[in-house]
Image 1 (cartoon, one colour):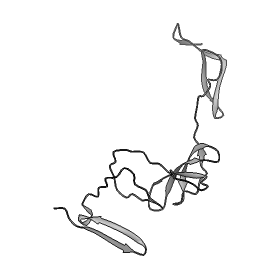
Image 2 (cartoon, one colour):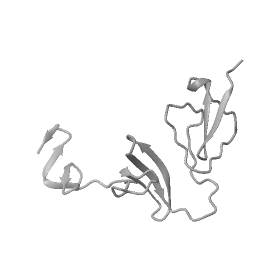
Image 3 (cartoon, one colour):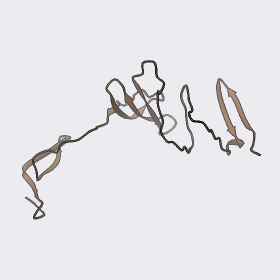
Image 4 (spheres, one colour):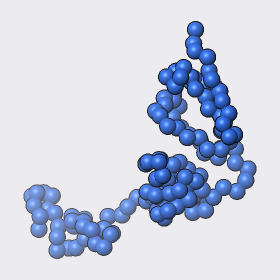
Length: 144
Protein backbone atom coordinates (compact mmCIF):
# COMPACT_ATOMS: atom_id res chain seq x y z
CA UNK A 1 0.00 0.00 0.00
CA UNK A 2 1.36 3.41 -0.94
CA UNK A 3 1.97 6.18 1.55
CA UNK A 4 -0.77 8.75 2.00
CA UNK A 5 -0.46 12.00 0.07
CA UNK A 6 -0.17 15.16 2.11
CA UNK A 7 -1.68 18.32 0.58
CA UNK A 8 -1.23 21.62 2.39
CA UNK A 9 -2.20 25.21 1.71
CA UNK A 10 0.22 27.95 2.74
CA UNK A 11 -0.58 31.54 1.80
CA UNK A 12 -2.64 30.46 -1.19
CA UNK A 13 -0.06 27.95 -2.47
CA UNK A 14 -0.67 24.21 -2.47
CA UNK A 15 2.11 21.72 -1.84
CA UNK A 16 1.78 18.03 -2.67
CA UNK A 17 4.25 15.81 -0.81
CA UNK A 18 4.45 12.06 -1.49
CA UNK A 19 6.08 9.81 1.13
CA UNK A 20 7.87 12.71 2.87
CA UNK A 21 9.38 13.90 -0.42
CA UNK A 22 10.75 10.53 -1.49
CA UNK A 23 7.65 9.13 -3.20
CA UNK A 24 6.48 9.21 -6.79
CA UNK A 25 3.68 11.47 -7.95
CA UNK A 26 2.21 9.95 -11.09
CA UNK A 27 -0.48 11.46 -13.27
CA UNK A 28 -2.19 9.36 -15.91
CA UNK A 29 -4.00 11.77 -18.18
CA UNK A 30 -4.29 12.55 -21.86
CA UNK A 31 -3.86 16.25 -21.14
CA UNK A 32 -2.77 18.24 -18.12
CA UNK A 33 -3.76 21.90 -18.10
CA UNK A 34 -2.06 24.47 -15.88
CA UNK A 35 -3.28 28.00 -15.36
CA UNK A 36 -0.33 29.99 -14.06
CA UNK A 37 3.36 29.26 -13.58
CA UNK A 38 4.73 25.76 -13.04
CA UNK A 39 8.11 25.45 -11.30
CA UNK A 40 10.05 22.21 -11.37
CA UNK A 41 12.83 21.88 -8.79
CA UNK A 42 13.96 18.32 -9.55
CA UNK A 43 14.23 16.00 -12.52
CA UNK A 44 11.10 14.55 -14.00
CA UNK A 45 10.34 11.90 -16.57
CA UNK A 46 7.69 12.28 -19.23
CA UNK A 47 6.72 10.00 -22.08
CA UNK A 48 5.73 12.81 -24.46
CA UNK A 49 8.39 15.50 -24.01
CA UNK A 50 6.65 18.36 -25.77
CA UNK A 51 5.28 21.38 -24.00
CA UNK A 52 2.52 23.39 -25.63
CA UNK A 53 2.44 26.99 -24.47
CA UNK A 54 -0.78 29.01 -24.80
CA UNK A 55 -2.54 26.21 -26.68
CA UNK A 56 -6.01 27.51 -25.83
CA UNK A 57 -5.09 31.16 -26.19
CA UNK A 58 -8.07 33.36 -27.00
CA UNK A 59 -6.45 36.61 -25.86
CA UNK A 60 -3.55 38.68 -27.08
CA UNK A 61 -0.22 37.04 -26.26
CA UNK A 62 2.89 38.59 -27.83
CA UNK A 63 5.54 36.37 -26.26
CA UNK A 64 5.42 32.88 -24.82
CA UNK A 65 8.26 30.63 -23.83
CA UNK A 66 10.36 28.85 -21.27
CA UNK A 67 12.68 29.95 -18.48
CA UNK A 68 15.76 28.10 -17.29
CA UNK A 69 16.73 28.96 -13.71
CA UNK A 70 20.50 29.35 -13.40
CA UNK A 71 20.46 30.05 -9.64
CA UNK A 72 18.05 31.45 -7.04
CA UNK A 73 17.76 34.84 -8.75
CA UNK A 74 18.96 34.33 -12.32
CA UNK A 75 17.06 33.00 -15.34
CA UNK A 76 17.62 32.55 -19.07
CA UNK A 77 14.71 32.88 -21.48
CA UNK A 78 13.64 31.15 -24.69
CA UNK A 79 10.51 32.52 -26.31
CA UNK A 80 8.49 32.78 -29.49
CA UNK A 81 7.52 36.32 -30.41
CA UNK A 82 4.21 36.48 -32.25
CA UNK A 83 4.98 40.12 -33.09
CA UNK A 84 8.10 39.33 -35.16
CA UNK A 85 7.21 35.65 -35.78
CA UNK A 86 10.67 34.56 -34.59
CA UNK A 87 12.29 32.45 -31.88
CA UNK A 88 14.36 34.52 -29.47
CA UNK A 89 16.79 33.86 -26.62
CA UNK A 90 18.23 35.89 -23.72
CA UNK A 91 20.87 34.84 -21.22
CA UNK A 92 19.40 37.05 -18.44
CA UNK A 93 15.69 37.56 -17.80
CA UNK A 94 13.44 38.18 -14.81
CA UNK A 95 11.29 35.40 -13.34
CA UNK A 96 8.35 36.60 -15.46
CA UNK A 97 10.41 36.33 -18.69
CA UNK A 98 10.91 40.07 -19.15
CA UNK A 99 14.37 40.83 -20.48
CA UNK A 100 17.31 42.06 -18.41
CA UNK A 101 19.63 41.47 -21.37
CA UNK A 102 17.77 41.97 -24.67
CA UNK A 103 16.27 38.97 -26.42
CA UNK A 104 18.16 38.09 -29.61
CA UNK A 105 16.49 36.53 -32.63
CA UNK A 106 17.81 33.08 -33.51
CA UNK A 107 19.00 32.72 -37.09
CA UNK A 108 16.94 30.44 -39.26
CA UNK A 109 16.93 29.29 -42.84
CA UNK A 110 19.72 28.95 -45.34
CA UNK A 111 22.91 30.96 -45.19
CA UNK A 112 24.44 31.84 -48.51
CA UNK A 113 28.12 31.21 -49.01
CA UNK A 114 30.35 34.23 -49.46
CA UNK A 115 32.42 34.59 -52.62
CA UNK A 116 32.63 32.31 -55.64
CA UNK A 117 33.26 28.59 -55.94
CA UNK A 118 36.60 27.49 -54.36
CA UNK A 119 37.05 30.75 -52.39
CA UNK A 120 37.84 30.28 -48.68
CA UNK A 121 35.31 31.86 -46.30
CA UNK A 122 36.29 33.90 -43.25
CA UNK A 123 34.73 36.17 -40.64
CA UNK A 124 34.56 39.71 -41.99
CA UNK A 125 33.14 41.98 -39.29
CA UNK A 126 30.64 39.33 -38.14
CA UNK A 127 29.52 38.13 -41.58
CA UNK A 128 30.94 35.64 -44.06
CA UNK A 129 33.63 37.12 -46.31
CA UNK A 130 35.72 35.74 -49.17
CA UNK A 131 38.32 36.90 -51.68
CA UNK A 132 39.54 35.62 -55.04
CA UNK A 133 43.10 35.87 -53.63
CA UNK A 134 42.48 32.99 -51.17
CA UNK A 135 41.13 29.80 -52.75
CA UNK A 136 41.22 26.04 -52.31
CA UNK A 137 42.24 23.78 -55.20
CA UNK A 138 40.20 20.65 -54.43
CA UNK A 139 41.72 18.50 -57.21
CA UNK A 140 45.27 19.06 -55.92
CA UNK A 141 44.36 19.51 -52.23
CA UNK A 142 46.11 22.87 -51.75
CA UNK A 143 45.46 26.47 -50.85
CA UNK A 144 46.29 29.09 -53.47
